[in-house]
Length: 319
Image 1 (spheres, helix red, strand yellow):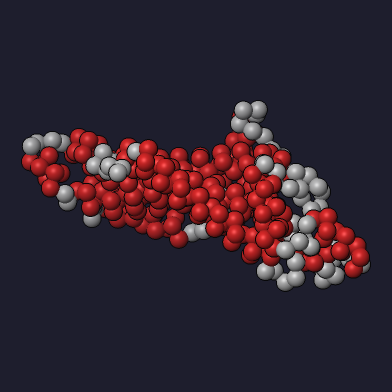
Image 2 (cartoon, one colour; image 1 turned 90 degrees about the horizontal axis):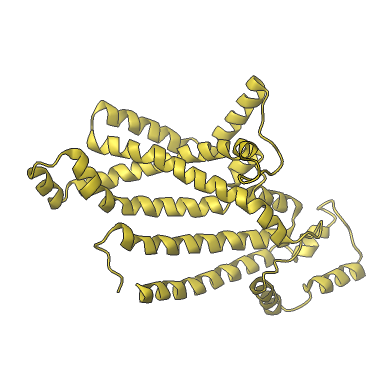
């Protein structure tokens, strides 16, 4: 197990380095350099003289060769320094510490809701397949998979404002400081995304359960006289969970990366909304570091999923 974990970590390191290189050079292949885009006359912001532009470039290190800029960025990241916003000079690390917990909470709540909704629906569809219950659940699963989460979020916000004249708070409240106001911020996006993710969980769990149901050991357990409940929970469920765990892990990684559209629809002050604002304001330092965090999060969660396989399915051995 230790050797497997060490190999997976060693494989994750070049992946993360590749992500940083990709992010860095994508930001640099924009028309001109990032500073020219920000202060261009077309952007409608500041227009600097050539001397002032050269001085600002030197101050930001943009006059150095690209490999020097990249190494400088990596050195700052290694020290925990993500730089400052171009517009308000606030530390980016402060932005992440302030808004990151909201995005993480919404992601965790969405995954929990998706399991609470999706797993029972998948079990019902597998146990009573090709019955009216199976057809009904498959219909609703298809609907929730087809409808975009941000569209449902917009409908929820519009109905809340027009019918009940209510909208969630616009400021940040943490669960440990004010649970009620915090849930007003996070519960709506969590339910909207959780239902959409739950449809994927239901579909995957139904397919996986039906596949495991055809195994010889399940027929043997049924021939011994075990009831369906015992067969499902003792013999089928753990072996059928691996694809569901994989899908949930990928969903968790994408949610922690910030569900930009849903956070925008609900006005949630999370990392997704911060990324939208940074793109609008062309604050390339925030964009660069947020995308890096999203990439590292995705790689880390995939590593955790691989490690969980051996705990979920005892047949898997790490060698």
